[in-house]
Image 1: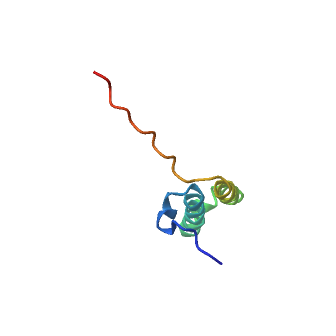
Image 2: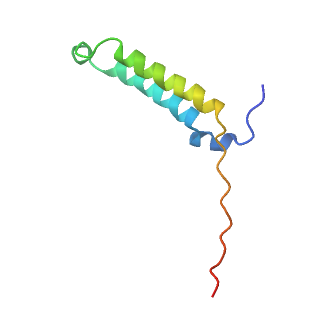
Image 3: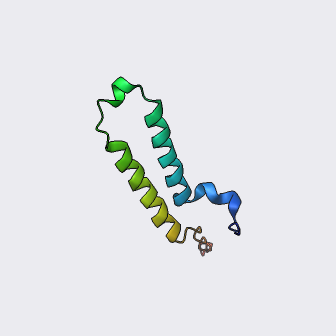
Length: 77
């Protein structure tokens, strides 16, 4: 297994952000009191987590390297 070359910039990738959000949804769901949790349909956190994980997979398949800025041309006088 080999790490990506720019591991220090992984927090900027959409795929990593989607995975962290999915973890956050599951963590928040566990920490919500039972009486509040019973008012939300049981499938909602599962669907939200699933959508975030699929978005992370799609984001990982897309090239996420930052675009190179176009060189600025000084205005002619």
